Image: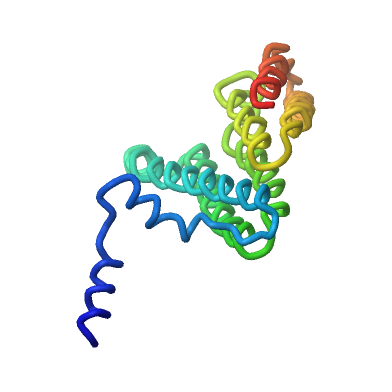
Length: 193
């Protein structure tokens, strides 16, 4: 191995120390090849969003899921949580490849509908309709304006509202979702538009 090649390989293996070095190190993993610059930008943003969701999911596993499982054992809620976390990681990994290799235009709606599905599976029905998970439906509404079209948040606000109503009707006894949930969905659509 020549000196030049050895120096180049040491430089490539060195961890980034500044934000600019980190971004230049990370850039090859974020770039999406597409002839349309707008689609390239949306695909890159989708890669960034999926990357952060992946990192946050791994952090949740390390900080909450593993200690919670060791402490409380395998309850129904823990199993449901592990299934949703596993699906999230597999889904993000597969969609990353679709976004980079196939088409960002195909990957973006799959990502958004998959995110809605994961949110729906991640918690119990009463908590989805009336409680702590209702607000999570705002994520796909806001993200849709970035990775799809600026008017897409309204379509996702309608979709999430209809989904919430459907889930409320499936509950035994039927639940009545708060009107404020639907209003917040459309407000999020207006803000992200």
